[in-house]
Length: 383
Image 1 (cartoon, rainbow, N blue to C red):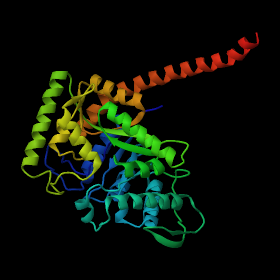
Image 2: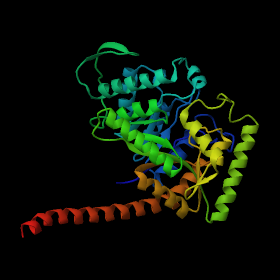
Image 3: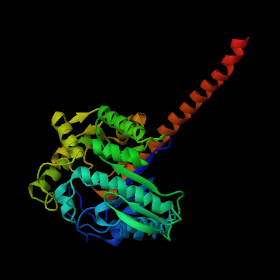
């Protein structure tokens, strides 16, 4: 199966290692970073969501009007708009982008962050709401006849949209989470299930839980799997590890100064995914071929924060290990957004694509040989 690469559509130049020098939404920087991805082999970029951050749908519309190939993953929290309104927004953006949109639905794993925008539901209630919300959006995208909805969280009558997506039957739905409630909701509704980078064995366990949840929901297919990392690459292993330790030092310095907790609660994380990252970091610094946890520990398990460290060849081999588990979408972003996007695109993506093509070709040959044996077997039995 083909492998895809997801980068970050940051609208300003700050990261965990460096303070922002641009506006929160800087047109020139947003476009420059997106072009760095489009010109260097990436498939799509993520417009993330945060309370107080630039509105991602508007930023994505700006980018879609400037670039012709790069696809968009738009993060959206169900608490910020009614699902019928959101469905029209997404369909319009899919029109603007000529069918390049996927929507990533965020349930929200932190009560403090959710309450910043008036969301006081419990975590389990939020997952229930997200599942209902996605179902409404899907129906609004595909129904050309008016419909009613009387659910737990939403109620309306006689809605029909006048704007429909370019993609048929609808754009893709992306979802993430590491709790049982997340597996249930995402397993039922997601086309793509997103995981943060964990050791191979733990990633395999999560993939099995997602697949089990999809079967429990009555699906005959299963979501594609995406895994996210923070690659730290250099020309030699020694230089890569020096860069990794400098990176962690910069993160710790910014966190000690309060920069990384100013906009969110400094308490221990509430969401299961971050708790897992912290537990993994406490158990060890290095896993498998190149996974390194001090970057996650330095941020308090915040989001996508486990690193892959090494030469481009080492990092590519590590990604192929995840591909062999069933991961076919790689989310990756560095700490210097533009330069790291260029380097990863030039030196890692081609290696992974080439090796995936070889693996797929070998599988095709093996499958053809097996089918030929099956055809020959009845003939031999009759003889």
